Length: 317
Image (cartoon, rainbow, N blue to C red; front, side):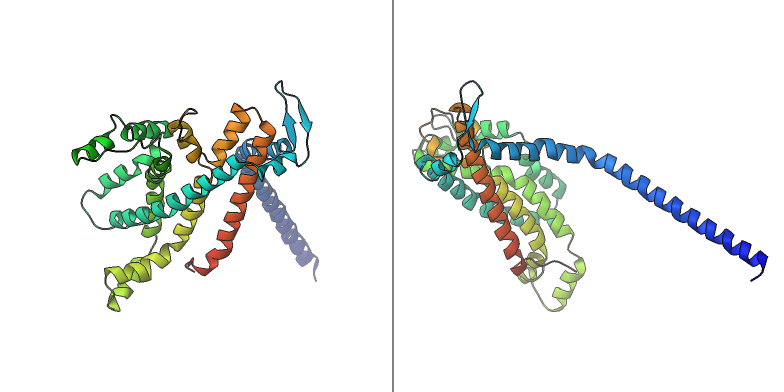
């Protein structure tokens, strides 16, 4: 090899190494920049989710006094969980609410989403109308439905009175309070669910429907053979989020049922019981044990759903 060729190779090698160093520096800068941009999100998760979670777990092993002091009581709060009839009733109420709210809202939302996805006049207007519950404040929703369910001057009982039916006390009768809560829960969850299902429907390629039509499939068969199977990933996502929300229901109960309401115990959820023990009865340790139990229940149910989703969820490859 001549001297000139050697120098040329050395120059090329130096340039290559320089480019590699430059690329590594660029990549490192990109990683640092990306980390800085997402750091507020991680900081928020740590401050508002992880810290309170571990704090609640610690509190669940303690008993708090009236003036802020605490003593460690070990597993006493967890032992008390299995002996508390009020907690058992709250568990029953929570599962009843979730069992009726989640599937009914899911079926109604899918039905409306399919209609809104079709070629109909005023489609944009209907989409806005059905999305209103999602952007309405929970306090406003509770106020409106309290007026509708009012036993004396509520619009529902006035409507029933036209047919000679004496309407019940929807919010103060233990036999009707849970039904009223479920109705409000379904209505308030429809908006978000419809939008999610609409997004899923619009992601289904028209070629699938064209192929089904060539095979002689009608509207009903296309729905069950094409739409529903390809919508299962969206259904699964909505099922998980809706179920978690239903298990944690608190705000509607707090806003619609007062502490003096005789039907409160018939709708009291685990989250609401946690609030009462922690902030009304000042039993923060036992309240923390309740919310930790709810966390475990939610994680177990979510894990079961994820393990079963392989049998019915169809992902497009």
